[in-house]
Length: 253
Image (cartoon, rainbow, N blue to C red; front, side, top):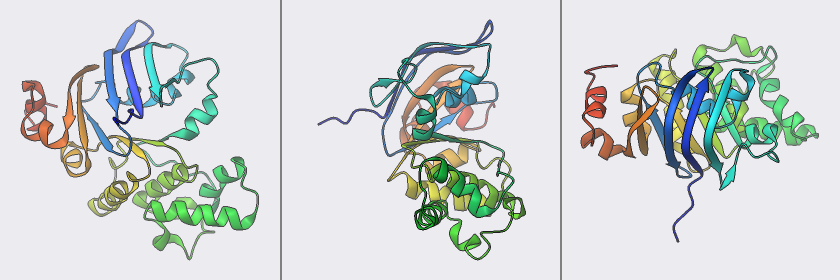
């Protein structure tokens, strides 16, 4: 039996005022894979990621045409609870944004809001999320320290743990390693490779090389147009479009 895609994007057009940022964008995203969305600056990739959990709703001049289906359900239907949608489709941004509280409370905050009341249940959830984000061994003896005391790479992994604690189905990552050193980047990439067994991961990677290392599937976007998508090896070693080849080999972008 053919498995239904986790996310289906149909003829998506996205506007900020009169400016169209995404053009007739259609894409199917399978479950339990890492999908890298590549493209030069101002290609609409961040807008696309934000559209997948309706973060663009927060921008008054934003307007969307087309459909985004999550497990076959249009995320813009009137009966969709946006808060629940954003729990199911969590997002991690390029700049780490720890809450001004302890390492423990950064992760526990969402758990408590989600209904976990007992200290044991919260502690279990915090440890599990920190382990999934490959941060537990670094912080297990200093959970009460301020989150801002962590290094940049650790703060980013904490933000990933904060999202994972809510048990999302899809994790969106917008250049999560853009400001990190190679060691921190490697730890995050290693985590993502393991996490795809439990989650669908859609990432705007730090660079082309990162996409090559971690992706199951690659999407190339140029000026809001989907140019090419396919399995990692196909896009990297036998691209169908010359523009894809030129971008991957560094001729532009």
